[in-house]
Length: 101
Image 1 (spheres, one colour):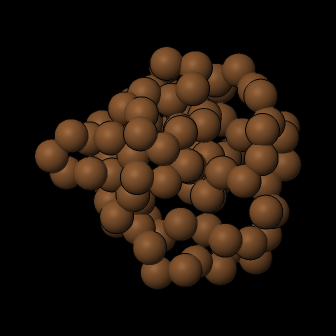
Image 2: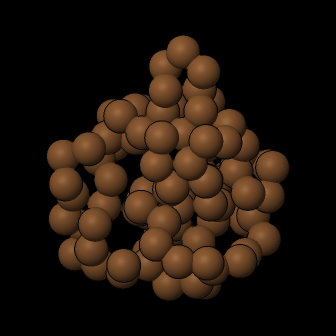
């Protein structure tokens, strides 16, 4: 996959409602990334699957492993493909605040 460890803001594991660090949840993903397509490479290519497609609408549990990254002042969602362990970043909160204003 094309994201780098230092770019990871939060990880979400299939079957869970909250991020691995428990700071964010699937409702945060829906608020910020609504119909955003999942990025599959470093060029921003998407595969047509949206963040909404990866969240069960009845239970709000994830159906795929996802990673949120912050890259060059923009944020992306990737499929999680490794075991990168990172602490959650304040970047996601800042980005959400900027969109809310």
